[in-house]
Image 1: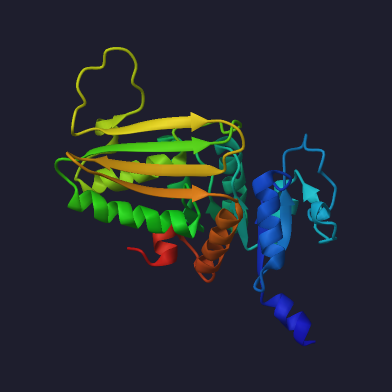
Image 2: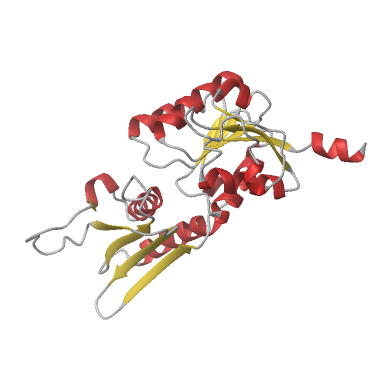
Length: 275
């Protein structure tokens, strides 16, 4: 009886992109947690995992099949965790809004129009959206905010990121978020001061700009370094991920944060109390 009551008090979580590397990491983290349970597993109709048990890759049975049907995959869930592609995320979000399912969104590459759709959905459900769910990355963002204010003059700012060969967007969502945090701390708009490419005779560097460099190769999970280069010194603030486990654990922090919330759009600074 006590075990049944404990199960009833767990947060029911659905995972989008269930057969992908991040989806599997999320499923493993949910199963290992003491306060969450897997309630749904979604994937595209062409996935060979459709119909299979979502935890089969772990060699155990969860009783939750991987499904391409949004409604059946979400019907028992309180929260959806989504790390897919923008078009998939928006479709999932529409279903979440209709069914009253909260969402944790880690998808990157969202356009401004996509983000407006997310914000509109937050009028009806509660959403945590962040380009990186890692606790360490978000603490790094706070450090960058502090550094930018202290190094506001006399330092050139460059953001260098590296990811695996399969990543389809550049710069990474995390790198862009780093740029946004720094620009805001400096009283600038990233749209006006970002430099995303340099080639040929570029002229001298504009000191008001924030530069971005993207590296793609191998199986790099995610490396981010912000360089503050001054005269006679340079400061580097880095975060390097060796596993996607940190993203999964951060996502579960977000799931817990949403417990009891009905509406609103939040980010990991809200989740971690870094405001």
